[in-house]
Image (cartoon, rainbow, N blue to C red):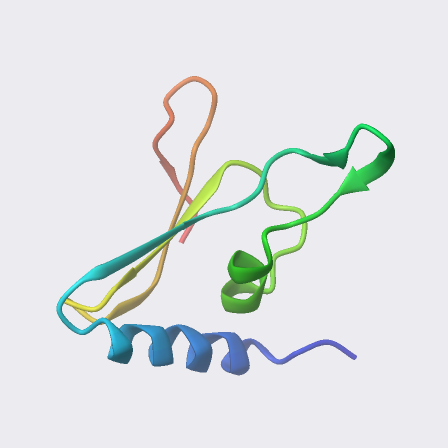
Length: 85
């Protein structure tokens, strides 16, 4: 059983409240663990706020100025600006 999505929303809300006059940007980690390890490991902060383990090339924007807690952008190789919220 995984963590409920409302928990991740509450976590983003908490960050938003802490930076009410600013914006937090978190980039998903898009590289292998290391050359000696196989697989992929998501950035722990990105995972804590989104619950997304395997999302590559994404940026989570927590906007304390507009209180938009669910804004995420996926960076595609061609356009580098594809929204996935």
